[in-house]
Image: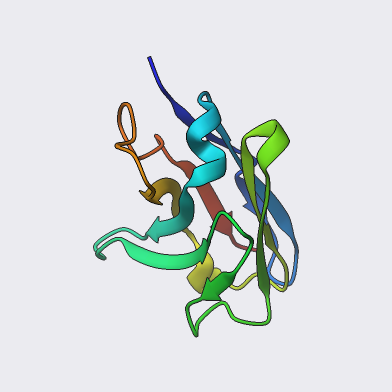
Length: 119
């Protein structure tokens, strides 16, 4: 079964850093625009950042300048480097296969990884 698997979440103090990974089990990953989303308790899921297959990036205003999205198409893996973390960054982070030239073969969402920013 096609999967998107996130990893790298955890507990970090304010001001700290984490690096999330999203590993895809299909090679069409390289054709897809991919995205990171997050959902805090009681809130709607929100877009954090996207990256096209060519590496063009886009960020929400709340993370611009602190987070960096990247990808390694050879490893079919996407990353989210999160620096200067704040308590309001606490959420479950999800990766998503946003759009591409063919239908994504399976669930386009990962299962999520918890990020908790607290002292």
